[in-house]
Structure formats: structure tokens, C-alpha cells
Image 1 (cartoon, protein in one colour):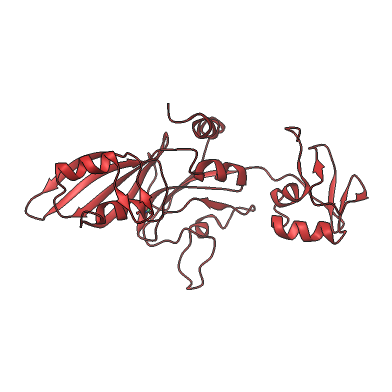
Image 2 (tube, protein in one colour):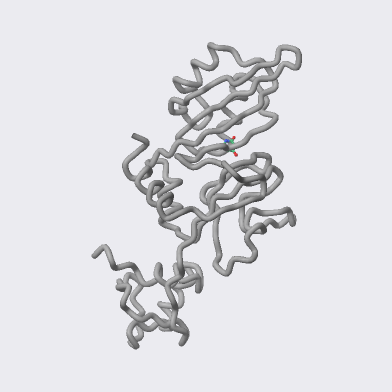
Length: 246
Ligand code: URA
């Protein structure tokens, strides 16, 4: 496929008109026209200059938006919640475009979360092949030992496989309170991974915050704040995913 071209269903989904799956149904039902001609073949490719109409409505390309959000704890990383709890997109209700979280943070985890309407960008940021480094600060119940730090750095066996080497730095330890504050940088994004890495040694994580995602950090933001990424930051993030963290 020519770099400029994209599949018709993707173009429709990217416009925000409907989901890719629904777009496929509309194409198959003969409700989509390209340059005035009805098209029913799903794989049809279109160029940016092609006019696409769905159910008689001309669709426009939606501007891409990339948001860096400081997710508070006790907020769900989702666009809706059947229990009525606050979700991350509740903070962006004023936006006209639908945005989606890039990966996820646990309900109890705070920190840096990206949101976007660019599905390709989301895939780049979350695909395990592209190893974007994520730095977390964790508060542990217990006194993390040097040997355990070494094990975490090498990689440990979790129930879903070995972890990749991590960077681990003890920031402070309190003997009386029996707590450890530790920074950990990982390039994977398995479910509850950081918590499980410390639980492996018997430490409960009482607080977890993601403070960096690649070169991005939370500088200048309070919990609940968001800001738009600059075009330069978006470019750097794409390059990082495509060429690694070197
Ligand atoms: N690791 C976790 O355990 N939780 C998160 O939210 C993110 C990484």
C-alpha cells in the first residue's frame, strides 16, 4: 500500500464517525461512497484527496490530539465504568473528539498517562516490541534488600514469564516505619507488573506513581491536570518507539 493510502474503514473510523467495525458493516451495506461511487469492498484503499461519504454525510479527517494527563489515584483508566466511578476521559469532556487512554494505569496508581485519538500512535506506544521505558516510584511496606534489588535488575520469574531487566534505585528507607521508597524503570507493560514484581518478594505496594514515560514527565502538573503534547514531543515519542531508547 502506498504510504499516503489507507483502508476505507480506517479512514472512516479515524474521522470519529464510528468504530472501524461499524464502518466495515456500513461499507458492506453499500452506505459508503468514494468520490461519488458506492464502494462495498472492505479492503478498498483511499488517498487523502479522495472524498468519502457515509450515509450521505461527507466525512472530514479529524485532527489528531495527544494529551499528557496526570491521573489521580482512584480513577479508572477507561472511557466508561459500569459502576459509575470516575474515568480518565471525564477530565476531558469539553473536547469534541473522542480520546482513548494509551495503555493503562491501575485504579490505585497515579501518574503519567497519555490519551489520544490516534490509534496508530497508541499501537506504537503499547506494542511490546517497542520498548518505551516507564519510570515508577513505589512505596513498599517492608525493607527492600540489596539482593532483591539485584534480582529485579536481572529479571525475575512471574507467573506470566520472566521480567526484562529493570533499573532499580532505593530512594529512602525507614527502619522504624518499615517502609521503602524505590524507583523502578521497566520497558514492559504487563498487567499490574510493578506491584507483582515487589509482591514476588513479599512486599505490598502501598503507593504507586508513574513519573516518566520515555522522555515525558509530570513537571508543572498536579493530579487531575492535563496538557497537550507538542508536535516535537509526539515526533520524539514515535522515534523512540521505532528506533529504541538509544
Ligand atoms: N504496574 C503496576 O503494577 N500498576 C500500574 O498501574 C502500572 C504498572
